[in-house]
View 1 (cartoon, rainbow, N blue to C red):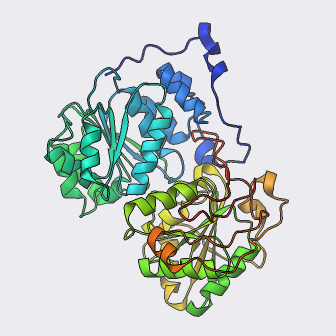
View 2: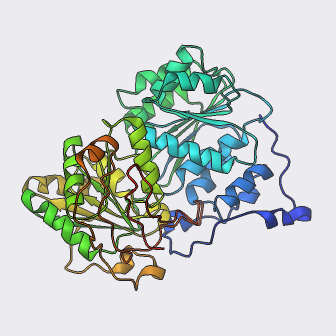
View 3: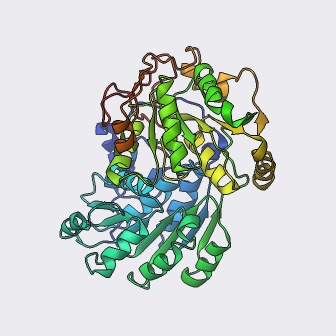
Amino acid sequence: MASATNTPSASNGDWKAGLRAPPKDDRPQTEDVTATKGLEFEDMALRRELLMGIFEAGFERPSPIQEEAIPVALTRRDILARAKNGTGKTAAFTIPSLQQVDPAKPKIQAMLLTPTRELALQTAQVCKNLGKHMGINVMVTTGGTTLKDDIIRLSEAVHVLVGTPGRILDLAGKQVADLSSCRVFVMDEADKLLSPEFTPVMEQLLSFVPSDRQVMLFSATFPMIVKQFKDKHMKNPHEINLMDELTLRGVTQYYAFVEERQKVHCLNTLFAKLQINQSIIFCNSTNRVELLAKKVTELGYSCFYSHAKMVQSARNRVFHDFRNGVCRNLVYLLTRGIDIQAVNVVINFDFPKHSETYLHRIGRSGRFGHLGLAINLITYEDRFNLYRIEQELGTEIQPIPAEINKSLYVAPSAIDEPAGQVPSNRSSAPESNSRSNGQVAEGQQSRNGGGTPTGQGRGQPRGGHQGQRGGGANGRGAAPQR
């Protein structure tokens, strides 16, 4: 394990002077990320090179999950951590994982597993940003990309391997990925990674890593299968539970009773009335995702879509462009793997059947203790699911009022701006474009609909991504206001 002795001291405390930190984020935050004990990153005996990456990424102080998990993880103890989505879990395991990597040793020393390709790409980017001064190589590998490219990349030194379980098992089984020195084994969204389709793969992967490995599990929900895995594969894990309540405190939840045929009209009304920075609209099937994206485009609003049946390169492009503010709306099917801090509104166009799905969906807004809005379009058939999910999550979903207070979901600095997205081009994108790349962004929203997408402050990068014109696969994205 790499030494952690080169910690900044008071005598050379001016090492921060040359860092290029992003602008400070002044948006209010909830206790989900502010209820800490006062521990600082500099108190954690982290290497200076890692601290430089942390501060340049915009992290200011640890969030509660980071404050609880990082010091324990640095002792190489197994960890079982439960915390809400959007409270800084990714940094809670990437920081100690990077700290334990020895850059001089050209071996895979840490493996970070995620259930989705998008989440793997996102996690790898966090690792690269935080470790950019450390001289380490982070590689991401997922299904849907060519095995040949992975083999070529693994012929060079890789220190941290991030990816989906199936692809990494394939590489290990073919003896392309040498995991014999991988002593950090992290499972993000562990509840999903231990579902029936993943469990056999996880069991096999564990056989490729050393017996003295450190295992860290992070998730928002822990079903019984997680306990079974803990009892079988973890050694006296330190358990962290920051889930005094399941839903994020900064997310206000509403429902509107509608008939199925009224949903698109209702969505159009919401676009006109709400001050949307960026929104994610969830459907329950791939077919409905594509149909709704086409409808939204026909209404004149820029819109991307993504689902699991799209080719990986198209999904990656949609995710990248939406994250960078090219488009304001994303129609989506998956519930995990989207951590875009500019999203302040989530709309369940189709109401989910399970409370776990609902929890992950609404957690796409209000990221990292900031404010967000979740609006559910409820049909007659959904009413029992609505009640059941409220009971299971111990939360209240309120009837939508005629006017929604902007202070519930808009940053104070942008609250005086006019609300609504105004379509300026009602022609839709060609069918070939929408089918091939998930980007059907044609009509551009006006610049009065929300505020520049920004990042976070406590335990999460601040600064964020600026809106931009053009870009995307077809070069026709809308630009959130600068």
